[in-house]
Length: 238
Ligand code: GRF
Image 1 (cartoon, rainbow, N blue to C red):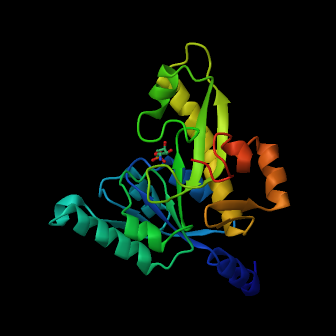
Image 2 (cartoon, helix red, strand yellow):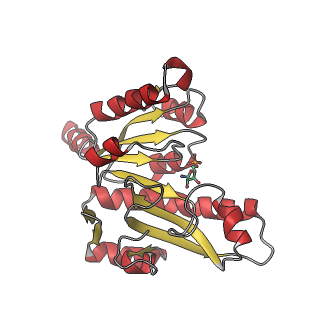
């Protein structure tokens, strides 16, 4: 590739900078590094210095920042440091990938439509923790994951896309979790890439999709729009 090609590649990569927030193993972050297109991860920020996802980011040459609770007098001081670091990148999208913290309303409000999360259930079913166990206890026929924009509630933001799977008879929570995680690794990079390309957009709580994006979602078996959240009145779900 000549200089011109490299320049073009550089400008495309930087066209849609995203910041990833994580607290743990970072398998979704890993999937993003491998499968994203038209977006560029400019930093990974964590509330835990020992998060394995940070180690992988460093190996990839991605900037990392960790703000551990013990280094701050209060929890809110820790969160403010995280928010300042995120703000400093002026990214187009803030991608939560297993970030185990509630995001305070003022930060959400000033970034409305710019924070994305992946949740391991078919929202609005099973917001919160232990989703796989709860899906089994509830004898759900299907389970899966949801990509959604973040609002001030917990797992209540406008739904972007869902991937579902039938629960097998007698399936363990561990087996189900593994299958759902594999779906997460497909759908999250897909959703972020489509947002980066402008093929998925949000206005208020209304999520819109290009015709091409709708066809692709169909091809992947992803649910989008009203199909993703039949219980909700609009396309925006939870
Ligand atoms: C995933 O199950 C995701 O849905 C949830 O947190 C978990 C993060 O896993 N929000 P990983 O750190 O990406 O492996």
